[in-house]
Length: 509
Ligand SMILES: NC(=O)c1ccc[n+]([C@@H]2O[C@H](COP(=O)([O-])OP(=O)(O)OC[C@H]3O[C@@H](n4cnc5c(N)ncnc54)[C@H](OP(=O)(O)O)[C@@H]3O)[C@@H](O)[C@H]2O)c1
Image 1 (cartoon, rainbow, N blue to C red):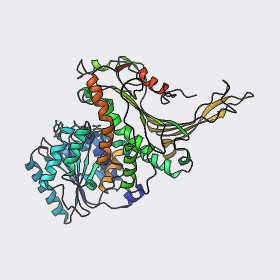
Image 2 (image 1 turned 60 degrees about the vertical axis):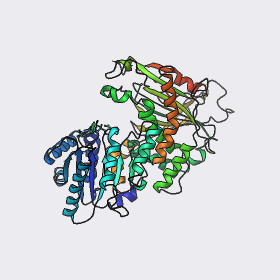
Image 3 (image 1 turned 45 degrees about the horizontal axis):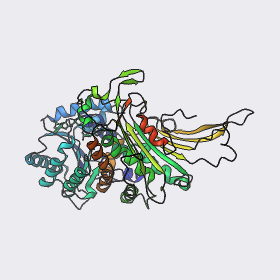
Image 4 (image 1 turned 90 degrees about the vertical axis):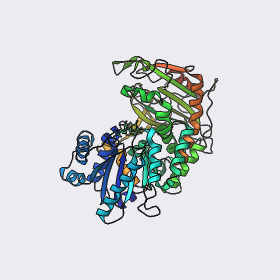
């Protein structure tokens, strides 16, 4: 968030340690992010990378592996000179995540690098393994003393923890406990890569740097807020993983709730990370528990059946590889939330996320109330559409404001028109990837774009009762929808019953 400040600040010499370095995330996102930061001269002057994995690998093989990953996944071509300088500082450490001896040997490597450097350095530990080993890694970082290295100084260790952060309230609390017994909260960076996206960061800038929005950003002018994170893809080869999670855990608990918090929070008193995160927490705390059953139920879940996606036949979820035939995992979830505070009382916030939907989109739609229909709006010819502010997180990043205008001609007819801003058209392509921003911020100790422990627990606290209820009900209430549609009709009814309809995906004319 504090782009100006972070980019001008100078992180101390750093030893970046990636646990799970042979994995998919390192190859596709972390290595390219580190390389691009180095290319932009944003890494500390002395920066080492140690990859950790259970299967031993020579340093040389690890360097080759990373170079191949960069060639495939970096947004920019490899600058050979930059790579030559970088690769000398890349090492691999083979050892288990459960064995303390492996951590003691890792510490030796770190001490040797520090000795070579002749000055202290901070360690940034990036836990990029499957979540089942987050806890043993954190425990061993604590027991080996690596967690509290140089604690109290500018060289204090830091830890980045990948998502998912727990699978319900209980496990998130336990994970927080394991962390807090070893690290101070200021050392902890829980990642949700959505927060590193340019468009998400610019949401706060748009809200709080334009005098146009703040006066209307409340219950007096806003009719509803809709947040959609949709995917065209199905579960693919990740069926085994996905079936243990579902849409609510995989998308809503993290990305969608973060978008909700940023859209609804009060203006913070400063850009200080704690001031921003305090306001997000306050907004999340004000959400009323959801009604789960009966006519006023505020949740809908669904699962895709076969259908056509972009003209191609797609199989149903239960026929996907790795999905048990008696699975009742949801591939779609929609919620209607109410934030019970002064600003938002009475304004529904509709959230939805699903797989195998008509299109891929991450959008926030702020729908404004219609003006009084005195001049226009009483007559069929004057279809008076509500004003909309559509913030597109991806793809086609940008913002569009829908206003009513007169169509040309002798007759007075109204039609919504669009005032549009596109990131790519205005700023060009090749903007930094989310992981570049996030790794840089963690190096600088700036937690603004990371999730605080209490934030994760509040979000789980809201959603865990839904998961428990669904678990009790098994397949009762699990609605089906054809692949390639916008989800189950019950999700449309959820809005219709409240006088709204989904905007994203609608041909809005
Ligand atoms: N991939 C993505 O696009 C993505 C996106 C968002 C978040 N994440 C999160 O980032 C983390 C890493 O994702 P990933 O896709 O890179 O994971 P991954 O490829 O499945 O695993 C990363 C590495 O962890 C080690 N590992 C795998 N299974 C393990 C097990 N059961 N016990 C202990 N170690 C194991 C393996 O390294 P060794 O065998 O060398 O030890 C593997 O190369 C996960 O928490 C994931 O949820 C990933």
